[in-house]
Structure formats: structure tokens, C-alpha cells
Image 1 (cartoon, rainbow over the protein chains, first blue to last red):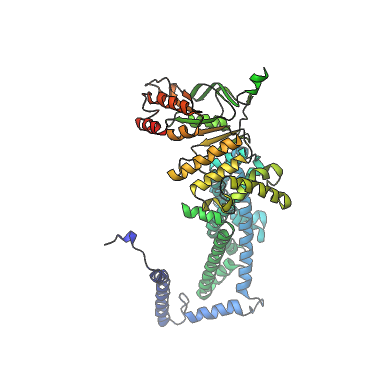
Image 2 (spheres, rainbow over the protein chains, first blue to last red):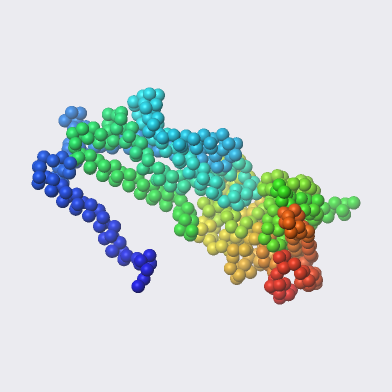
Length: 274
Length: 278
């Protein structure tokens, strides 16, 4: 009898096993929903598939009766814009400070303790301060994302910079590199794929901060909509929105992974060896 | 007088000491190395041979005494007069073999970007290609280091280091991680480059036989004085400084080493290997 740790499912079996939990979840939902609706046809907690289709139709493909906008797409665009702005700015700051901290002792001495302290401040606790300082507009929502994820990304990139083999840095110096050239040609290019990894890992937190900010003060956005329709117990809107957010997050993650593999094949070859 | 100047040593150590706090690593190192010598450095683990290499490289500084390159004190940081090949991680994984070799010239030509374009790039590419072909990597110019075998990576590291035409080339167990067959090829390559380019080489090795085969001179680092209560009290010195330039010298050196009784420095097994090597 082979040990269970050594037994591999066949490709088809793997596919079946991968989809099985999802099918089970859907099945449990349908059964529960049917049971509740049989008891009370106007139950709102577990809507039927048909109400989902109607809700999706209403949100995505019919203009809103009040504003004439296609709400799902307006919300999506507003959220994506905030998310990408926040994550983009965070990534740029993190790369800059992470590399500086990792490479230049005179940058690290004042900055590293500061970053460490800031990373321990709970971002949600200072959300009111952001609203007071930056107003209720776009800026405060983007700021929450930046404040929420930048310190972690800086610390990650600083560690990644530290982890570059000392031998490489010495070698570059014997090839005549000054500090700037060394950072530009040896360190930065090697950190870019690691930056993509850092972005992938922090995207979940970025969505969390975005939805929190939208829930509190906004006039459009995916998080705003979910918290708005909550008042009417509109599960038929909330659940598709949640699935849609999950799908967006998955697609972003997948595209980043693809970008990394296309742009930095040497990095993935290196990982494969280890 | 001019005779004396023309034979100025390329590397000279005068009363060199290295200590870490209480611990003495190297003591009273006095050595002269002439241009064109190939110095093999052997010794037990922790005997200070790597510390000595780091002093030559500039990543560590002597506590006392002087270490001179062409009669001048060495820069206190790694510089282009010193080429280095480590056992691992000597090449840049994000660049192709050709880019790795071009890098030194790119640094020299573009202070701001460390990168050149257009016709200048083409010229550098041709020069780097010639170097790659000299170490037998012409066919692998466009491959990344992760696509090269261990031996090919070391060839690349050597090619990269030679682009700066360093005054001294430092090899830190360069072939330690290679298979025996590959290692033999690498011995051929390094010996050929040493003679063609009249390099001055310092090579640390665990393999006494390798040191014997390649070097024109062999240093054995070991502690002369021991204090059992305080092992850190005394540092290592060069206990044997043997010329290997001719076959006769090798024979004499092997005989001298075979009389060493201290098993931490040179084991019986290694002594046996030696008598086979000579």
C-alpha cells in the first residue's frame, strides 16, 4: 500500500476534485434556498437562481431608473480606478523606499524604524483622520489603501533586497559599478518580479480597505453598492457583487502572474531550480 | 636600482593582523607575491584563509599592518583592480551570458544609466562575445545563467571578471561545487588563461591536489601557537610557503608536506593524494 503522501490523482481526477467543492457549495445553497422559499415565498435571505438573474440583469444591463446609468459598470469602474491608483502608488513608494532601506545604510537608519512603527498602526483606526484631513472625495479612499498596504510592501521589498546574495554586490563593485549603477542595473531589475509578488499578496488587503472606505463615504463603487442595498436585505444583489469582486481579484492576480512569467522568465527558471 | 624596482611585488603583506574583538584570526603575515604568480591557498576550515581573501578583496580591513597592491595601500572597498570568482552567485541571474560580460564596459561608459545603446552597444557586444568565445561559451551567449550548467556558470563568472583586466584575480573555491570531470576542464581553462593573459591569481581551495596541480606557489594557513584554554588567543599564519613552479619543486614540496604530523592541516588521505599527484 503506497503512502497517501505519495499518491497522485490523475489529470481528470484532479479536475473533478478541484470542481467538486464548488459544485457541493452550489448544491447546498440551492437546497437550502428551495427549502426556505417553499416555507415563505417572499423570503429574502437565500434568493433563488431566478432572482439572481433578474438582479444581475437590472444592475448590469438596464439603465437605472433614477440616474440612467448602468450601475454595475459604474461601480466597477469607480472601484477599479481607486484600487489601481492606490496599489500603483503604493508599489512605487515601496520599491523606492524598500531598495533604499536595503542598500543604503544611511537611508535605512532613519527610515526603517519609522516604517516598522507605521506598519503597526491599524489603518482602519485612522480612517476618520483621513476623512477629516483629505475630505470625503477620492483622495481619502486612495489614501486608505496606500496607508494600509505600503508599509507591508516596503518591509517585504527591504527583506528581498537584503536577500540578494552579497557575492553579486561585491562582484558588481569589482566590475567598477558606483552605488547608483549597482542599484539601477543589479538590484532594481531583480526586485521587479518580487514587487509583482508583493502586489499579488497585498491585493486582498487593498480590496478590504477599498470596500471599507466605500462603505462609509461614497456615492458609487462596488463596496458602496453592497452596503447600500444591505438596507433592503437585497441578497440577490449582494451575492452577485461579491462573486464579481472575487472574479475581478482573481483576474488581476492571474494577469500579474502572467506578466511576471512573460517579463521575467529568468526569475521563474530560478525558482523552479530550488 | 632599476632592477630592484622592476621586480616590485604586486602584493605585499607587512606584519598583517586581523582580529575580531578578542579573537585573533591572522597574525604576523609577511608575504610578497610577484606578478604572474598563481598562489594556491589551503588550510583547515576556520583557519583564516577566507579572511585573508576578504582583506585582498577589500570587504574587510586589517586590524594592524599593511597590505599593498603595487606598493600602494589597497582601497578599503572592492575595486576593479581585483577580479573575483566565488563558488556561487558570481553572475547576475537577470542578464544573459553576453549581458553579464558586457556589464563592466557598460558601467565604464555610462555613469548615469550603466547601459549603452546603438553602435556603442554593438561594439561592446562584439568585445564581450570574443571573451565568451575564449572561455568556450560562444554558443551560449543568449542564455540566462539558470539555463547554464554549474561549470558554464563558472566560465561565465571568469569571463566577466577578466573584462576589467584586473591586477589580481581572486578565486574563492571556484570549482568546489563542480563534478570531477567538469572540474578537470576548468583546470585546463584557468591554466590556459593564466598563461595567456599573464594573470596573478590567488585561489582558495579545499582540494590540496587541485592547489598543487594549478599553483606556482602553495600557502598553507595554520595556527603555529595553540592555547587549549583560549583557542581564540592566537591566529593563523602561513606555515608553509612552497614554490611549485617546476616539477622538481613540486616533488620537494610534496615530500615536505608529507612530513607534517598535524592532522587538522593535512590529512593522511590528502598526503596520499599528493604523492599520486606528483
